[in-house]
Image (cartoon, rainbow, N blue to C red):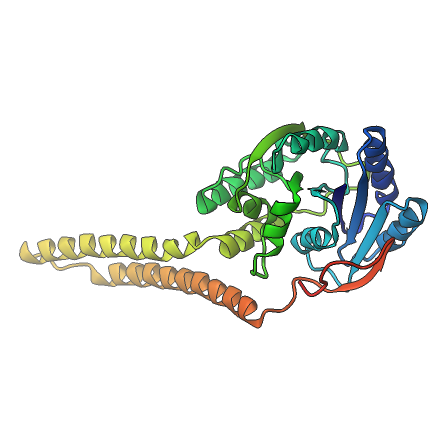
Length: 312
């Protein structure tokens, strides 16, 4: 059976459409399936719509969080509840084309354990959003040493891969990078990003940058190296200025010290504050991990027996 995990946040207009379209395509392809909608603490009628979809289709199940925990938590909650031999993750807004699921399922049957949906294009986006997204993926690719230029959450995974992901202990997760980290046999399937069926994206450019830095910090120690680089650059600058000052003194010229001192103080102070900020962020990440609070809390389920561990 194929378990399809569909995270949803304030998507009341799309639940019925997504359930009908994804379910219809899988039935037509003769693929046994279940759809697992995860309501990430929505403020609209998303949960009510999931309940109605579950009443209309016995293959639909729902999980509702006690509050908004984020898309990463929603993905892992869906994987935790999944009962299939393979699991797919797809966006509720249908920008990930459900028509690719039968193709991905067929590749899984051929022995591939991870089928990655990679973007052939990004669809209709503003120039600023595209620049922010490309910058994010370049940063992530260098930080995690995995090519993530066209990566997405649209994936189909074997049960062994899902179990490996669920067995990881960290509280803050980055699904796209972790699926590459766990390994297993993988293959890519290209898709074109479709327009949203309804409404507009919940991701702003600012939230994308926050998401980027949070995931880089939780997955890689690369930002910590910035502190070392800044320290080396400051040392080089200090040596150059020191040599210059000694030469001027040897030639009998008084050094114009006041301006130089002010510039150096501002430069070194800025570098120290940036360094402390980066270190402080990692300490905050350690604080979160040490407390070992659950990734999410499940408030309600529908459409089937409650399975999985809500505390994870």
